[in-house]
Image (cartoon, rainbow, N blue to C red):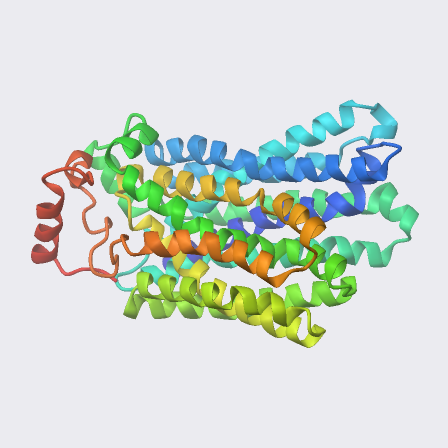
Length: 453
């Protein structure tokens, strides 16, 4: 039991810190970087340049999934996760030390962009590794619960990253905040990283990887084996993530712009609504993860997609009625419905790949989808300029993405009954989706040993 608690703490702590750093940058972009690092006579250009660097973090995430997925499948989950922490924490700490444009000129934004790239690459390897650290160490019958715990890093990291800058801004004058106050949350990353490294350092390698290593079945080039033997599962992950991914990016970030720019709500109302949604997620994510161990991941995931599809247009109609409706819908759509999808996502996706390529397949599929949905805010800004807050336009866009995921969900196996965790140790060629051995090997597993849930 003590080992299980430390594993969960290790997966959660690193995940929280990674997302804290990632969202801290996003909050600082509008408050600090547009003024101190992208000096331009036209404020609109400064804002555009600053938010372009924010998007670079999303674009870099697939690169990180390939790098750390490769090492995670060849060297070990634990080693890869230690590196992602150092990369994210180190880059955030250095951002806190960067000279501004007024001090070193053009070199300031160049260094900022470079460090943002490191952040994106590190995050691209963190998510999949954190999920595997939990799911591959889970006791029998608790994989869904364990897999949901690192997902808490997203709402906790977002709230912590936004709150830290807001808190410092409250304690300082505007001049003090721009002069040195904004640097404190970035520099504080060093303390958090040391703590997380200590926690993760005491966690052993996962049993699944250790068995793979002991058997000598280590992939030479994991991404090549993933495309060769498990490309169907890879594209399933990308497609399944796209639908909820667009809505997720809206609910957790663009809703602030949408509510204040197009619906004329105050910043306080918009931030409160987002905080309510995140607070609800902290309760629902582990609860849904626990339930998934009894009824399966697929049924919960599909139900969440269906509810999101049905409520896509009503959501946009209702949030423009009053602040109360904005609060209710953020709690329902983000805190309950999307949280149910996200709670099961890491476990479901990981169950589609064998241990040999699990880190790579899980991470690359997820981060490719994340890179695509990262362009959502750019598209919505254009839609808002042309159509205003039209519920039919915004809701229709969400429905189109969700329709893709719903169709693909019909073809995803029910991993509650048979998953690749039960077939660990079987050669990858015999687990390939187009292999004549695939079905027979799965049936052999079902007959010879009881299945975990």
